[in-house]
Length: 343
Image (cartoon, rainbow, N blue to C red):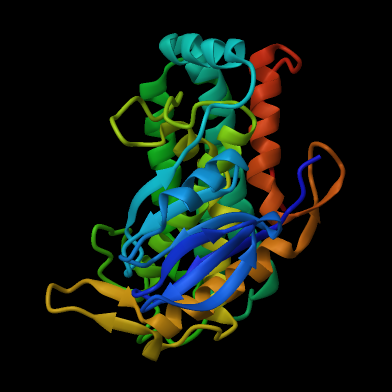
């Protein structure tokens, strides 16, 4: 069984990573400033332009340690991948299913069902815990609208129909997202989802969370032998980890959106943690990214009981467990892919 290990985040722009024996070495101006044993790491995410040595990248690929390269402001650039793991027959099955719209729809609709189910319960949690501070009727209406979509998602017969239902549900969900933000509305407000670049603090946080979650999902899929670039709902596009985007759909409301709401509502992030650029883009400061990542790592270590397996697991293991269940379905060990349904 895979265990949850640490993620090493490199935030300083001038840090160069290298390999020394079984250690990751952080260098600044050719001086060693820190060492991290490889066996304690699950992944590395670098926000430095200085990069890393080929030896270190090769060692991470060999040991299945995820390695993502991002700009200092958090834009994803590339991931390091080694040899594909797992049975080649599993990947061939994945490709055949991806080429069949009907089979792709069967898997995709369970993922979208999970996404809408989790989005609804995120709304319900806010209504339950903060009923006197929010517009309870507005939240109730959105929750009911999403609930009415679930049977339609289960009966969807093609991907275009499924995308339409997902879009309707997302519109209802994000239509009340601002209502779930409880503090400092001058800084933290949500009118609509925007990205590339994000134009407000909430969208900046959501984009950063989605980027980290996508990396975790892609690494998890490759660990179980699947090709993260070949999806079922998200179709093939060069350079896009389409299957990772599929997998993270059901995890967005509970692992990313809810995390962002907790950061804001618990005042773990503040107005001074953001920069507004001349272009209108809003970005996290260095201190803001540190606060975000510290809380992200803490959240990944918190435990919950998996709704399908009935076992207590850390949150950080959920992408791996769902990848494993997807692989088992494609092998024929499970009749259907069981989505992650959170309450």
